[in-house]
Length: 291
Image (cartoon, rainbow, N blue to C red; front, top):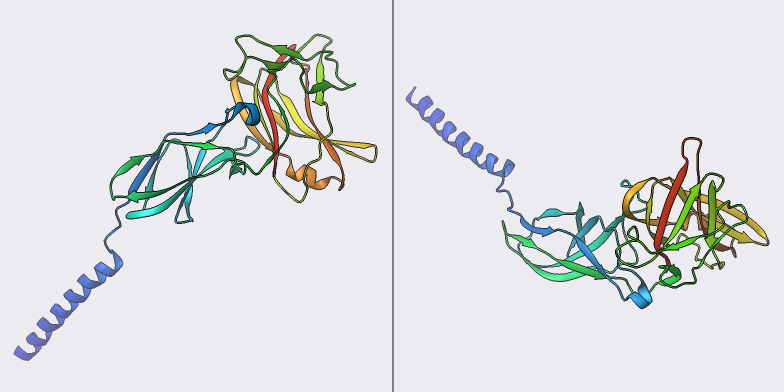
């Protein structure tokens, strides 16, 4: 019996030691994160060449030492499981075509890159301003500040004139915007930019940036010209908004479906319905960008 008790005691000690070491293996000490906080990402432009600095940057895409950490809707406090000095990259994210499910980094904005020292439990607030990259092309731009605008109505439009307005409803960034007003027999408008554009194929990004404010739904699309034949696709419907909004529309899929050698124009269309009597639509700061 004494020998049995001794063996039992020894076994108990071994079991307890094993259990304690197993707990440490199963539940190791948790790493304490460092944090960065980002309220917003601002955009700086040279107005004469790049146009307005309006943007709708909704997300921050975070990378540490070129490894992706995640995408975070702003404002955000972001945990980083790192300590010490590391390369931090922040890229500006948008909702492509205004759709929350298609969040992407915008290919024409540069990145914020810095060597950052991370300290566990510390929250570092980062204020950042980005710029446009320099290696892209502006196929078309109109901010309506000049008297001659680059939009023209098509033959199917019942609206006979595009107004260039300067009043309290105009976007804060400039003095003028293009206005489409529908009522009674003037029940629809369709307009295009006044020059055919050569745009890249091969799924290269081709984005239209646009600020807009509207009390009636309207549509934005693209028209392709090839050997005297026109094909048109209304890509996106923009619902009513009582404040200025911005959208980034990617036309690469539509361009990819067109004939090689086509040229293009951007299309804007709106029409009254049986349940609407008037429509007021404002657009501003149009930019068509590609690589």
